[in-house]
Image 1 (cartoon, rainbow, N blue to C red):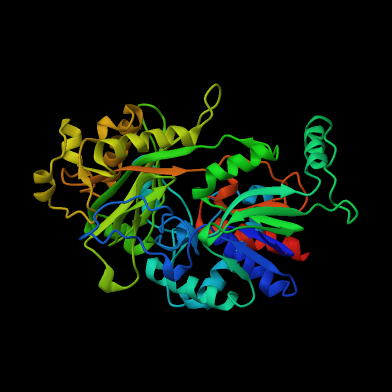
Image 2: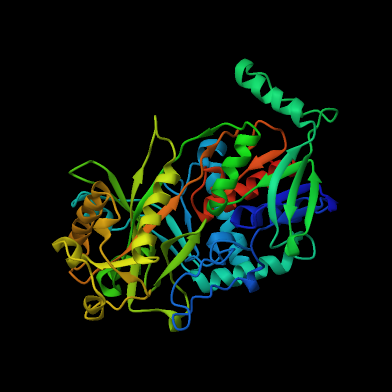
Amino acid sequence: MSKMDYDVIIIGAGPGGIFSAYELMTKAPKLKIGVFEAGSPLQKRHCPIDGVKVKECIHCKRCAIMRGFGGAGAFSDGKYNITNDFGGTLYEYIGREKAFELMHYVDEINMSHGGEGTKLFSTAGSTFKKQCMQNGLTLMEASVRHLGTDINYVVLENLFEEMKDKVDFHFETMVESIKINGAEKALKAVKKSKETKEKVPGKSKKNALTYTIEYEGPGKKKGTATAPKCIVSVGRSGSKWMEQVCEELSISTLSNRVDIGVRVEIPAEIFSHLTDELYESKIVYRTKKYEDRVRTFCMNPNGIVVTENTNGIVTVNGHSFEDPAKKTKNTNFALLVAKHFSEPFKDSNGYGESIARLSNMLGGGVIVQRFGDLERGHRSTQKRINECTVRPTLNATPGDLSLVLPKRILDGIIEMIYALDKIAPGTANDDTLLYGVEVKFYNMEVSLNNNLETCYPGLYIIGDGSGVTHSLSHASASGVFVAREIAGLN
């Protein structure tokens, strides 16, 4: 078993981990940094679905879309929403001005690494805000940097090229556990602190804690690595592992939400008046029937619908590109309903997983249905899909989403489609395609202080794995913040 020593260990090479490593490399170059990532390097991340020989998810051991350098965001649409209004609650920990400043800083780094020339859209002063309000809809305010899947890849390539000789990257390396030196004493102190509010020892050099990770690398090679500082940035795909670590270390967590819905695909012209000016419009609607919040998410003008595999469950997502040659005639976006649970049921992610598994069971993966068929209570067939005026960009199984989604959620989605039809006529056309299911899993929100540090000094949880951030921009900003904290710059 090999053993390594570092000044800082980073678990996960998604946006949070990357920007932590980058900031430490530039601001504290003497520190020895080790990044441990369960997935592959960027150039080895290839989904086998080609639409010809492989038409649907084959459940790879490690999903190339979800894991690897760049995280789940590597092959996303590359949208960086610069706002505190959505994308997470980072501002509650570090302040609104600091969060906003760091998101702009991340944008500057992206621009200097291949993103220059891409457009920064803004909803400020948009005439559509009034139009939305007049129809019971709310347009959220944000600045949106759209890199596109292709330019986002270039930015990540350039960042890795700059870091690879200064940071130790360990790919295809699964971290199995985090151990704390003097764990018994530290755990007792944590349990005591919950009762007496006393601080956990570890701040002074004499009592300083160190962290040892146990991992399995390529060829099932086992090893350990130790450091006085550990940053955990495991993203959505590491949600179950994160829950396990928090339980083992007695780190408090709060139940979070799960977003469940469908991905809508329509002719690009229907939403062009919105996407040409705003690119992505975050629109929220409160249903009349249940007063549930339904929102648009991840809008991809002239994009494609794709699948993703989270812990063996196949769900749907969307991508789009900057390259005109890769654009399609369709626009896609998600419609999601947020569900929160409390006593006696708290497993929000488990609820979302059960619905996704039902879709996988009925459709062998993703189900697609015409909106007209859904409204009339008909199961879509391959014949109806073939005759559809909207040509699907994903090879999905025609079916009936009413057999998968709970009535309350489905009613909210249908109501939202008719509301959107008022500002974008044609959204509620019979041939509008609905892919299901789309599920956005959120980690249990980990108990952290204002430095994004757990009850153990030197152990930080950042990015979407913390339950604090839900976006590329917020996750990246959290990485920069913690790196500066470690470097003594905050």
